[in-house]
Amino acid sequence: MSEVSSPIRAVKGMNDVLPGEIARWHRVEKAFHETSQRYGYREVRTPIVEPTNLFVRSIGEATDIVSKEMYTFEDKGEAVSTGSPRGKMLTLRPEGTASAVRAYVEHQIHGQEGVTKWSYLGPMFRRERPARGRYRQFWQAGLECFGDPGPQVDAEMIDMVTGLLTSLGVQDIEVLVNSLGSRETRAKYRVALHDFLLPFEARLSEESKQRLKSNPLRVLDSKSPTDQEICTTAPSILDFLSPEDSAHFEELTSTLAALGTRHRVEPKLVRGLDYYSRTLFEIQGKGGELGAQNALCGGGRYDGLVQELGGPDVPSIGFAMGIERILLALPNEPVAPSVDVVVIPTEASLKIRAATILQAVRRAGCSAEGDLRGQAMKKQLARAEKLGAKFAIIVGPNEEARGVAQLKDMRTRTQEDVAFADLANALKRRLEGGPQ
Image (cartoon, rainbow, N blue to C red; front, side, top):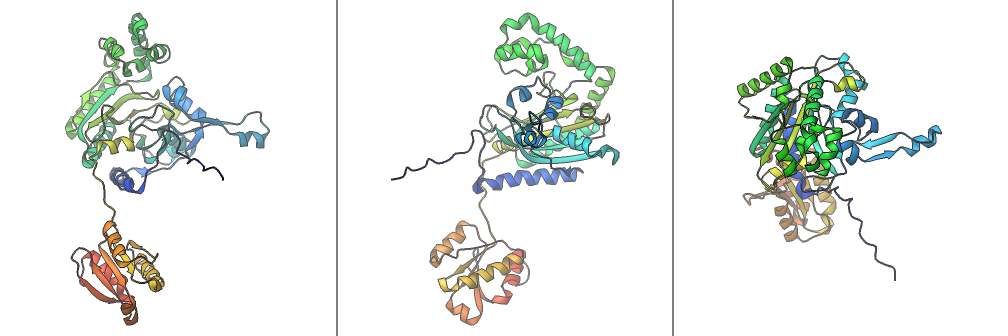
């Protein structure tokens, strides 16, 4: 007797989205696409696999994403084809901004238009500890705006995302904003923060001890209670802003106030990417099954990144939001399936007739289901109920002989005979609420 094979399971942290869940995903995706289009953003799609160096140069070699979390591998096929001892190192994209900037530079978009506004939605990959709403393959939606130095565009983006989340039903939204200033400002603050933290090094968590050496700003982002206590009296980056940085930040907060977007200035907001400059923001929410990990989206300016990746000096800002995190924040209201019509043959001999009716109504633009397995009519009607069908088209031997089918309204339980040739149009008229 042969052994029974054990089932193959999905890779840890990479989850299936089944049909019963997909309607909620579609609702979020549709709201994102419609909102971004209203604000003038056009969709861009970039490869899932990128050169590893793209993320090293953009995100920063010392960041947790690059040093610990990326899925990186050697392109062995390239090594064989070129005769090189090693192939190019490739990485599954861990975020969307670097890829968008690479595409912007590679295709010389800066020479085609003064301001470029892109949106994207797709899977990202990070090898971090899986948790509720945080997976190793996760979906992000985001916007990137190239060519506008702000700060009005910064405020517009924050206001847009806040409105999107509110329209979806996210509760208790809180907007946190900060400024990291220019590169020069950030460099000065980094030295001051390092000098402040150094006497506390022995008390810092092991992770923050490493960050103190590589990127002291990330210590401010630590979840360790001891680290947080130490940082309560740390110098504020807002005290290091240049006059230009301060003017930009003041105009940002003034514009948010004018738009009616409630926000809180949080000087310890840093986020984990090296490319940020000046405006930085994070939006948090409560409700649903979100729990303590309440960050829904974040973003900011990355004015030097286009130039860092080989393009001209172009001011830019962007944000990304995690789809799984948004879904956790929403009320868990299952969306019932719904089709326009279910076609029901009462006998197996009428399956071909049912197939031709299905073809006609689908070509007319209606969603239609049919069970052609020869099931009893009672079971087929029960299935129509389960699918949320608005109508049923029933054809039996008597109807076949007369060249008609019964068009049954599943809501009013009324029915009438309609000729086969007229079924598709009659169904469309009833679905649209027109004359019968």
